[in-house]
Amino acid sequence: MLTDVISGIVQIALIINEQVKLVKSNKSQCDRLVTRINLILPCIKGLESIPDNAKYLPILNNLSATLQNALAMINNFADQGWIEKFFKGQKSQQNFAEITDLLEKACSQLNLALNVQQIFNREHDKQDQQEDLNYLMMQQERIIKLNQQELQEIHDVQNEQQQQRQVLESIRRRDRRLEALAESLIDRITPKPTMPSEQPIIPLPAKPVISNDSASVLSSVEPPPVEVKVNSSEEASTILTQAEVYAKSRQFTQAFQLYQRAAKSGNPQAQAKIGAALLKGRGVPMNKQEAFAWLSKAAQQNHGGAQFYLGEMLEYGDGVKQDLNQALIWYQQAVDSGTEAIQEEARKKIEKIKVKLVA
Image (tube, rainbow, N blue to C red; front, side, top):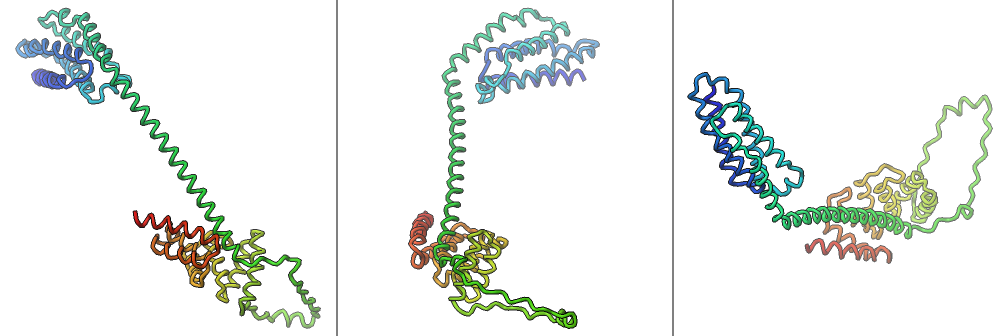
């Protein structure tokens, strides 16, 4: 058992001798520590031949643990980032002092035939510390440069975060502008609604008086369902006018119902309004696939606003698969069919997509 412990101590000492050649910091103190370890090794090996040497086993175990701590400390000083570690709080002098005290204690307990005072001369420790400090002072230019690099990295990260925030805010503003623009484009195509005071007032029929004898008979007769038919574009235009009155007062559900009635005649304006409502979830649950279908119907009838909407959905992959080539086609048709405002925005979109396609 004792032989195994001594063999382990010797093995650790050999590793320390090799590792100390790689140290970048506190080299003088590391060299002094290795010299002390090497001086006590021969005496430790001699313990194997001493009778009744089992009593030294606890001391040798403590010595083995001390050498392992010394190896861990030296490994830190061999690290390429030793300067950074030094300035992040490594207490090297305290570590050296603790290990030196433990080695000196072990030597005293083992009664080794050595001049302990000569090996553990504290004046030598002070000289080693001063030499290591002088070396650090010579490295101050590098240390300052490292600090400047770290500060610059922090500054770069902060700038990048600020730029990202600005880009996100720019995207939000653009989306708000596009939404407002698209809404206004469709509104411009819609006929101006008739004021309520100008609309004809249709009198309600008088409520019939039902006698008790005929009440039971009449109550069992259900009135036939009333189907609203839109037979002309003029009728669809009238319904759209009524729908816009509701939309202006933000009664989107009622407006959507009237858009559906007007769309029965194939009115492209009503189809575009349905598509826009489904796209934004106004008056009806949001359904972008259905919105795309209704906008396509209006776009095929050369509705500029619907064509512009389709271009945006395809450009950004909004509810449909992104397709820049198809988006380009719809924007070009919006230039041909839309109002001046639509044409202007569509041209900007075309130039933007062409740049993306070339890249």
